[in-house]
Image (tube, rainbow, N blue to C red; front, side, top):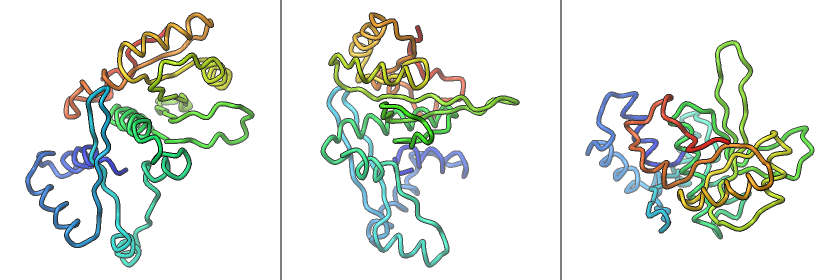
Length: 216
């Protein structure tokens, strides 16, 4: 986890303090000054949004190792390593926004999931699953698609993987276009978009808040 907004929300929930508390900001500032973490802001213009990212510096990682804490690869680092995340920063940001909003709604989330023992040409951006009582977790593989190109193979591969399409578009207008393309190919599924997701204020999101804008 490396999205500051999500980290703030988690700390505020656990500690019972405001997510915009000045105390949190001062802690981050102090850690930056001591070269334990670094900060970066990812931005996009459509929709107009940004996310502040935090990551451990080399000194921060060494401190964690001294304390006996395992240091995991963050989602941002995984996208950079496996998905040319630096070359496509808007797609990287889109994937992270969707992943965050799915987690806030109670889903287990995997970014660039490994498809083990599955023969498929699909390369989904995100996997989400929700553990239900007395039921096996149902995994949904999701494509975050910011363009409106006709991507027949992408949607067919995803539908072959899980008998449905799951997509997150850039905005509601793009979502309508992508959904329309899938309907013409008789591919069923569900869709949402970044514009709709970021319109939900993080403190107001719960497990009952819908993740999908439409299903067909």
